[in-house]
Image (cartoon, rainbow, N blue to C red; front, side):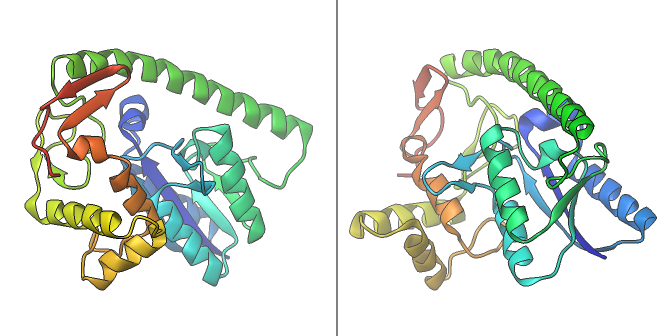
Length: 258
């Protein structure tokens, strides 16, 4: 039986669970060995929320997840193995999208911590148990989010970087109060905004193709996709030297790229 694994961590997830990528990968590999399954690959996303979605395209906005779906489209896979379902989704909308994509390829989810979970089962007991577990997880996530939000609002009001994922074009330690420009990545950001200004009607996919044609690549050395392009374009104010968290906006929190 051929299976693939998926692991994800976000700032909130690491603070809440301590489930590092390496821990999740080790658990997935060990589980597959016990089951006698052939683990073909483990796809990962780091520092990305499980609730993030492109609402216009109705797609899960995660690079690792998109790589996984591309692999599934051209390879026979029986299961996606995860530590728990919260690694795949953190909102009802994302859950629906994940279910839709996997059902399209007749692939089920095998959750190590929720062994009875299935996107195809309709057993009332399993539905109740899995639903309660997801509801409890959502409650804990909201509680953690509120605590973290208070601290980040305070940092933003003081003109400090409030943490979270460091935007493409900058570098610095996660959680640091200061980030600086990454000159190599900054050149890509500047070029993207120039292309966008020159061709305002181009789609996100066309913009990504143009960057790839010019020899640019992502931080991981991969080709750009519309997901990364949208993420950069959506942060225009940040690249202009402004920072906003919640209702707090600060100028000059970091060096501007554009």
